[in-house]
Length: 265
Image (tube, rainbow, N blue to C red; front, top):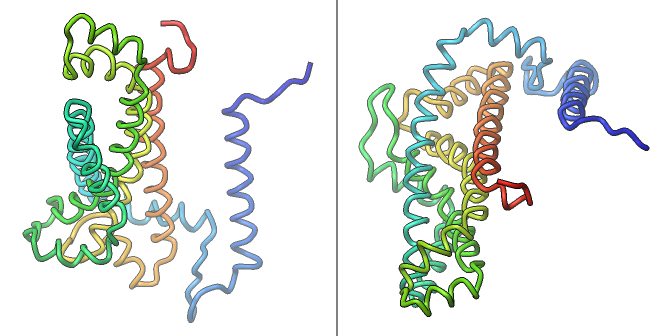
């Protein structure tokens, strides 16, 4: 019988291979990449050294603000999406309008509404979350959650819905008794996908200015000072945090809906 490596071993080997390729490439084919005397692609050692140079407080201060914005945007965007999806099940005529709203929110260029949001929301004080970043984070998750929730709610068993109807249950009772349970796997999957989207939306919202603390302004300052190890360090830390949050929500999904994978409760 063919023996396969466990998933964690495959992931570890892949990560080591990627770091090794990055290290070798940074001192060979990408050694002279960058304008002037700037080494645009630093080695892993340089990035790790930069982590030590700036200290933990630097990352804690900036990431705490961006995470605050991402969490608020995540809750607002997903909350509105779930309410509208549930409302469609009670009032089916609203489905077309809700879907159009979701598509519009997905198609609006962020670079087009960003400057308008900066004018609408007040300038945050240093260390406070940005209203612009929260709004863009909410906008980034709205479409995915609306579509995923509606697909899950529509996937409810017809026979179960008919049983509720026969016993006098209306659309609201069908929603609570049947549709919500059937939709949980799809809804939780949409909420998992929304985690990195909210984080990215918060970072993009900080790029529009008038924000003194956060990942966005930290990367802008590092970029303007041509500090490529710090830019890479912030980017890698952002990706790691987004991945960890994504995996945590995925774990919650598997624990909450074991029937979706054929597991026994």
